[in-house]
Structure formats: C-alpha cells, structure tokens
Image (tube, rainbow, N blue to C red; front, side, top):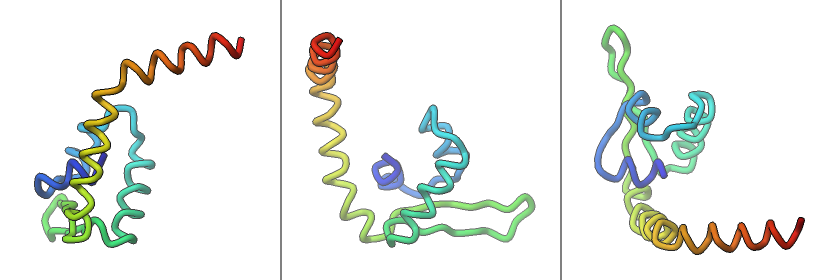
Length: 94
C-alpha cells in the first residue's frame, strides 16, 4: 500500500498515517524502515524546527509500484466475491 502511495511523490509521515487508517504509528514506522532497508523507499530529514521527514520511492520502489497497484485493483474488483467465499467457508466450518 505504501509503495503505491509513494509512487505519486514524496509524503511526510503524518500524511502517510492519515492515508492508512487503522495502522499504528509504531507499525507504520516499522514498515517504512523495512522498505528503506530493502531499498524501496528513501527517507530524507530536513534540518528545520520542528524536524521534517519525507519518504519517497527509490527507482527500485517505482518499478514495484505497477505490479503492486495492479494487485490492489484486482483485489478491489473481486472484493465482493472474496467476501462471499469467506462467508460460505465460515458457515460450513461452523
């Protein structure tokens, strides 16, 4: 999800947090660090008061954005079918 968001351009931590409802600040920080470690995202700290930090996709991350966005579109298009299958499975399991 973050790869797709950062494909559009750099975003601050607070912007990413607002765009991903339900994620904790701790989990967002962990995920961003992992993406940075993998070379998919880069973090830039600006020497301002208060400090400003922006995240952006690296060239490697931009290459991953297309496939990630295609998977997200597929999941969105099939959400109803997936939910119905889960409901049927859960009913049969009970």
